[in-house]
Length: 132
Picture 1 (spheres, rainbow, N blue to C red):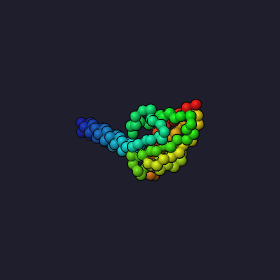
Picture 2 (picture 1 turned 45 degrees about the vertical axis):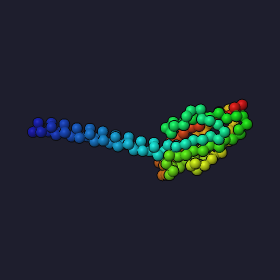
Picture 3 (picture 1 turned 30 degrees about the vertical axis):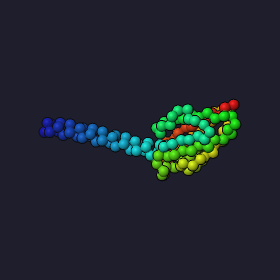
């Protein structure tokens, strides 16, 4: 009887381990899907070049603008057109220009994508420096 119980416990332990690994793999798969859906497919800053090459998984970008630029137009293309988007907490339309006022010096522009139900989000940052 002890022998059967010992084997049963070993089997249960192995089954729990396999289920745990499967659950972790499934969770990682769901995270990968969300990361893909909440990615940007393009980022343009009118009148400036990005200091690093665009790559959708990169979360931080920088651009330098002349002192004469009191505002900048930012255009973001979302990888998933159903994602909600805000730029500096203002609703933004995917693929359309969005005006952002600039102060002299560094300016932080927050681009946030969220799922349609608002449950998950991802933030990108554009550091726009207006020269003095």
